[in-house]
Length: 222
Image 1 (cartoon, rainbow, N blue to C red):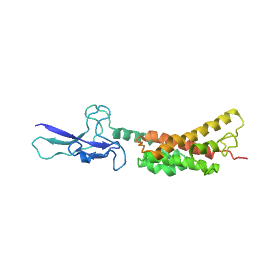
Image 2 (tube, one colour):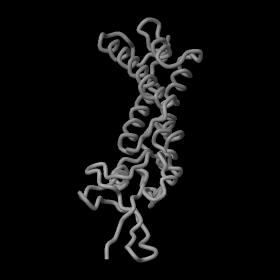
Image 3 (cartoon, rainbow, N blue to C red):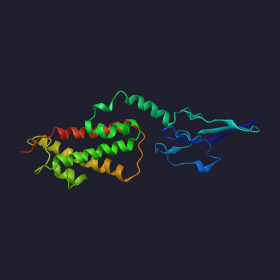
């Protein structure tokens, strides 16, 4: 008796889209309607198709398909299986150690695996805080960072700006705040960027937390 597997389509977080990828093309989706993640139907390591509904020739019906964690062909874990391991690792580094504003805007999104939105909200908070402490509410992004942390009449002083090292630090953080807006917040706001890695997301949130803490530690202008 011969048998046949249809192909399964699954999102990178492990939600099954269809177990009939070959038989019913109309059921295919580019993105998951539960979490928004991209979908795959092949092992990303060896390109073997993910096994779907299992049928036997001459027999009506078949075996219900289950989402498996490892590829039958090469043995490597699928993305959702790897994510489970990564999520376990992040328990050792709780978000509670981050800046309160990051916790406020990003913790629930992170816990719900909305990683891109968690990053975007954290960096929105950074820009909003920089506007608030500098009083430059009419500026945004790179122009805001350059005006707020300029070496000439800065609105925000991260140190006394007396030694060359202190001036270098001030200018370096000016570039970091500018880069945070240009390289993180803006792409997340304007492009449909997908982030599926909780460890990388935590690293983004940690950097946002650092930027917010440095604003808390600023020196009041004379």
